[in-house]
Image (cartoon, rainbow over all chains, first blue to last red; front, side):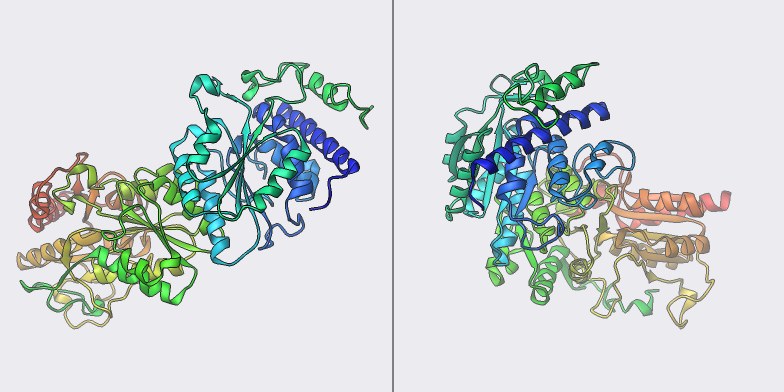
Amino acid sequence: MEPLTEKKLEILALTANRLREDVIRMVSRAGSGHIAGPLDMADIFAAMYFHILNHDPKRPDWPDRDRLVLSNGHICPVQYAALAHAGYFPVKELETLRQLGTRLQGHPHRGVLPGIETTSGPLGSGLSQTSGIALAARLDGKKYRVYCLTSDGEHEEGNYWEAVMFAGKNRLGNLTVIVDRNNIQIDGFTENVMPLEPFAEKYRAFNWHVLEIDGHNFEEIAAATAEAKAIHEQPTVIIAHTIPGKGVDFMENDYLWHSKTFKPGEAEHALVELRTLQGKIKSEHQ
Amino acid sequence: MLNPEAKLNPHLFDSDVAQAPTRDGYGTGLVAAAEENPNIVALTADLAESTRTDAFAKKFPARFFELGVAEQNMATVAAGLGITGKIPFIASYATFSPGRNWEQIRTTVAYNDSNVKIAGHHAGISVGPDGATHQATEDIAMMRTLPNMKVIAPCDALEARKATIASAQVWGPVYLRFQREKTPVITTDETPFVPGKAEIFWVPGHEKGVKNGISRGAKADVLIVACGALLYNALVAARDLEDAGISVIVLNMHTIKPLDEKTLVEMAKRTGAVVTVEEHQVMGGLGGAVAEALARHVPVPQEFIGMHDTFGESGAPEELIKKYGMAPKDIVVAAKKALKRKKAL
């Protein structure tokens, strides 16, 4: 991993912003899809594909690549945008999201789109698959790392905790989970729908190494993934506290934007905000 | 008569015919396959001994994973292994896997096209005293509706061994169905087994001495298509029918998907009446698969031996087989009924 210089931090911030713009455009054009999750995970996706992962977009099947498994497949618009900008497929193809014949399925499908490691969408199964990949890596003596990106609401699935037990038992030190702790799900706030707290303690009880970070701070994202690499005897979970709908004022912290569709003008308003990082920067679009 | 070309057990109808549970064939087949291929790994959900995975676990401890009572996790961990160069075999009772973890199998194994082999044990009502909760009679239907999935129900322990070895050599998801109880060993090591190819196990008596077991164009009164250990009852019924002057062809349809439609259609044309035999719901299982194929190619009267939209119950295996109408005499009655319907056409 190269050092996180001021210049690199600026590039990552602009990249994350670009991913957010693409998410708004893609979901708006498709007329359906999820928004809040993709927006709040844009910083983590930018950090992963443009700083942390050891990967080669020109060789998506490279056996020694780090694997990034997206467990909560419904936030795939942000992954599609990250993959396209990283060079896995043409950026123009983002316009085809959810359309007949597209490689950008409503939920990601392995084998049709380069860079997608597993088919996902039905919740709670990504960590198990990631554990399987981590086991295979260990059996083969491979050094690559396996990342599972998941959501907080997904932790209500029984399958998920079966996998937490399994990864803890097998001391899968090559596995890192990043949880999008945005506190929302379709029916409301997670602590109302089905409380997860004390969240970190639950992982610790299953023999995991636990880190908590600000999911919008690139230095914290990089430091946490680096620390996880140094923990060999346990899998690591990084609980990334995020703001759902991050970057667009009328979406932030409103659980209804989990999967709401745009009214006329809303997408345009969101894009104007994003282009200036809420007035904080001068965007290349200005 | 038994098809000489099938090289079946010559002592098949002896009272002391050799018996073994089909799950034993899974255990020995898994070890044999794993000796050849280091990428084979095995997983169980707290049922290592009764799924006969224990022999593999003992021989290849580094390649064996105990999941605990967590069938959903077993299927999905296997899915991850299967897309990373491994050939995972997962084993539990069929009511739990593929019963409880069906969606995980659908999404992460079948749609994901991961190279996972699913061994569903304790299938059918012959599980016996454990009762209906543990008697899988829907698993074939659940698995054969999944794109990318192949479905094999071996008829005896030897065929189970061959099917296990063969499934490791076939790329992609496979469902293998095994049974708990000892059943007659119908085949021999020489009996042909190719996934997706039905074998003729019984030929009309007047065909005696014909090369390849059955002559071109030879006809019979009725065709019996069976899978799993009930194939034995089908052969007993064929013998009894022949004694009563009714000529029979029996097909071992071990692979329910992809179904060997070519052989099925040809034999249905030669007979014009069909009985399907399976220890499974008649809806969606072998009977359903055969009916779908015949409806498209050669619609002929068909009778269904199996579970008729009901759950099983506790009891001795042979008592249950009798109660739910899967004994040889039930197959004889069904064959006569199909024949009568054919004549009435």
